[in-house]
Structure formats: C-alpha cells, structure tokens
Image 1 (cartoon, one colour):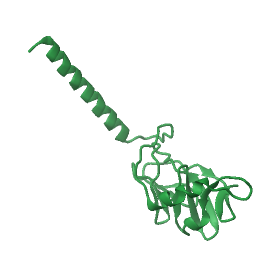
Image 2: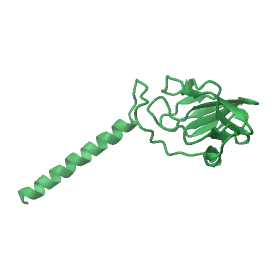
Image 3: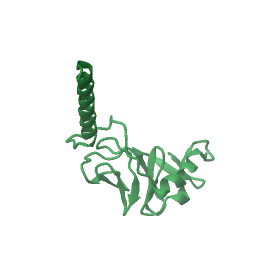
Image 4: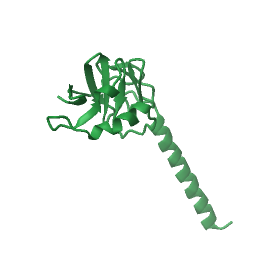
Length: 155
C-alpha cells in the first residue's frame, strides 16, 4: 500500500471522529442554559401550520397579527414562526419566544397546559413561560400581546 493510501485513510478516520464528536456535543447535556445556539428542533404540530397563514394578517391599528384568536384553544396554544401563543384562561392571551432556554431548540407543541421542547424534554407553563420540567432553568421570554379584531397582536 502506498503512503498516499495510508494518508487518505488516516484523514478519513480523523474527519469521521471529528464529525462524531460534533454530533455528540450537540446532543450533550449542559448545566447552563444557552440561548446563543441555533435551534435544531424539527418537530412540528398541526397548530403550527394553522397559524402560519395568520402571521401575515394585520389588525386595524396596522400591526402584524401574531395569530388568530380563534386558533388558540383555551388551556393550550399554537406555535408560530417566532412565538408560542397561549390562552391559559378564556380571553387571556400570552406570547412567549418559541426558542427553548436550555440549548436553543425550537419548542414543538403545546399539550396538557405545557409548552414542550423536543430536544431535551423541557416543559414550560403556558401562563408564565416558567420552566416546569426538564433541564431548562430559565423562563421563555414573554412578549406582551392583546386581542384586536380577532387577532393576537403585540400590545
């Protein structure tokens, strides 16, 4: 076997080991909450698709609608491109960042009065955005919202 063949094999082994290390590091646990990493969560819910269309709508004051109020179930929520919009009690709407505070994954669903992240199973309260389980220790960032003409808009 030539020296070139050995060098090529060694390079492939090194590249493979480096790639595996990167994958393991991305899935690894962390004691600190890191919101600077980009989200890699790919799970979606039916509610995400339902609100994608409403994110382009406008309310009467000219602001962009985050979601349609009718799409946000009482005790649940919907996920848009940027926010998780919830309705913890009838007529009370909340909006939080859809980026998990643990390692920056996008949250994937709102079930059983909890916002859930698929990456490391962190859960957040739909009324406060506070962590209720998993490795996340910081609340989701909240954005003040109100209902206007059937749309949820920034307050």
